[in-house]
Amino acid sequence: MNPQALEQYLHENIPLSQAMQVSVIEAEEERVILSAPLAPNINHTESVFGGSASAVAILAAWSIIHVRLKSAGMASSIVIQRNIMSYERPIYGTFTARSFIAQPEAWEVFMRTLLRRGRARIAVSSVLEYEDQLVGNFEGNFVAIGKTSTCNN
Image 1 (cartoon, rainbow, N blue to C red):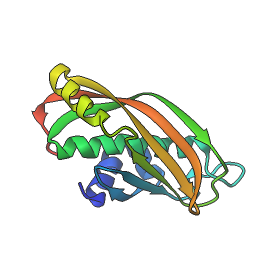
Image 2 (cartoon, rainbow, N blue to C red):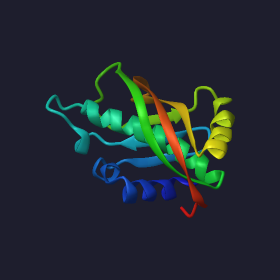
Image 3 (cartoon, one colour):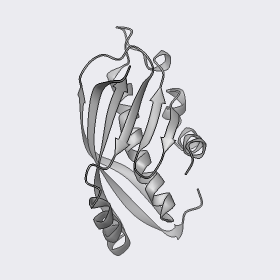
Image 4 (cartoon, rainbow, N blue to C red):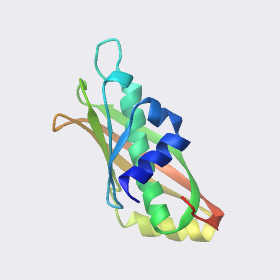
């Protein structure tokens, strides 16, 4: 999936991503990188609102699963089950969220389970960066629920 296609999908299906002016920098099976500017995500201290930072981290993590499932031709609904977010320092400008699957071997188990049971869970991580510095960490579990039709998006 190319970055423009993922960005269009996000903006059309997850309206918050458009309101936050999220853009897709990279959309690969190994990682997804999203970017968001300060202005629509600002808080009272003129830094990025923690909820916005968390939302972009979650969106990046959700997106890597979406990209991989689309690549595999699998139609499914993806929902977050739980997450942990930590913030290392304030963000005063445009920032990125880079997602990845920390245990790549888990993907095979995830796919086998999804095919066999129609439902599977996987852990995904994201790191937030601002001015080439780590500013936040996200870890979350996502559940994919298979659909009977093939992907069209």
